Image (tube, rainbow, N blue to C red; front, top):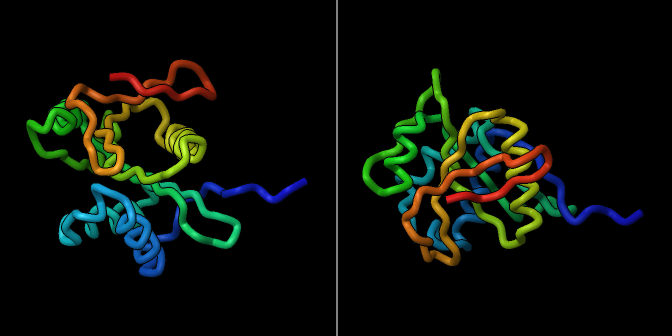
Length: 155
C-alpha cells in the first residue's frame, strides 16, 4: 500500500505553525496582498483555539489550510455581502464563517471541509469565494450538508 499524498489535522498553536501558515498564504491571492496587521491576529486566534485544519504532505510541508470563526448568522450574512464586519463570538454562536481557505486541489479542499463539518457540527457555514485573487459574485455563500459524507456549495 502506498503512502497517502497528504494528511489532515488540526495544527498546534505555535510560532512555528504561524510561520508555516503565513508562508502558505503568502503564495496565494488574495492573502498574498493582505495586511499582516489584519491577518496575523485572526490566524493566531484560529491556531490557539483549534479552529483550523490543514493538509500536510508526507514531508511535513503545509499544502492547504482552512480556518474559521464562530459568529451569528445575521453577522455572517452581512459580511458575505460586504455590508458589515464579521462579529466573532466566543459564546452563543449559531454559525461559522470560514475566513481563510487555501488549497490548490479540489480533493484536498473537500477533505478539509469534511473535517471542519465534523468539528463544527450542525452550525451554518458562510464564506466568500476567491480564485487566484478574483472574488466570485457577491451572492450569499453558505455550506450545506446535503447528506452525510457529502458537502456541496450553495449560494
